[in-house]
Length: 154
Length: 70
Image 1 (cartoon, rainbow over the protein chains, first blue to last red):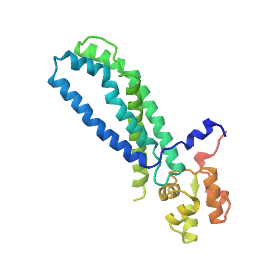
Image 2 (cartoon, each protein chain N blue to C red):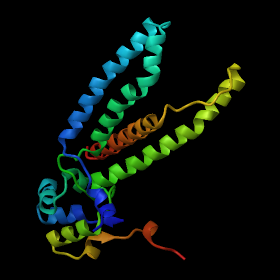
Image 3 (spheres, rainbow over the protein chains, first blue to last red):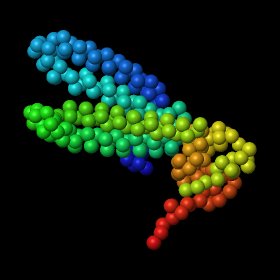
Image 4 (cartoon, rainbow over the protein chains, first blue to last red):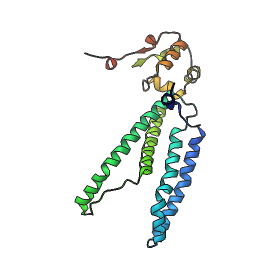
């Protein structure tokens, strides 16, 4: 069995799920603090330059890492159905991220036609933002599929 | 794909938990299979047939939708 075949067996220990939630919980106050600082110091070039340089990392590293851990942490009793759900959810995530990235310029066009705003290319926020978006939607899909399976039991 | 897991489980007087234990999956997976929401892999199908001591063909059945029509 080569490495590519083994990748389907790649899952983190179950405890990583809790760690993922904790990481997101820790990351969110940092983001909020950063945003608040920005609002308070609107005119400060120092804060703005710092924000421009580091916002991507501050915003997306805890979120994307946390979401990754949550999605790829094994269930308490992991089996092939959960693997299949995770695969489906990842496909949904890829599709959503792809559509989101493709349609961002359309939003700019609509904004130009409807509101007369300046026509400009919308930057999705770099590679990390796309990864966060993908993982976020994959997580939502996974939990939806899991909840649906649980609901069917009732 | 239809299956008779629920019927066989009842015939063997077995709970979902017990069957899950025997074939090494979660109870949710047994429930999803019984409700035809999840189609198991060949390995799992063979494990089920071994537990119930019947063939896979007796346990699983193709529906009209699953058949290839020319």
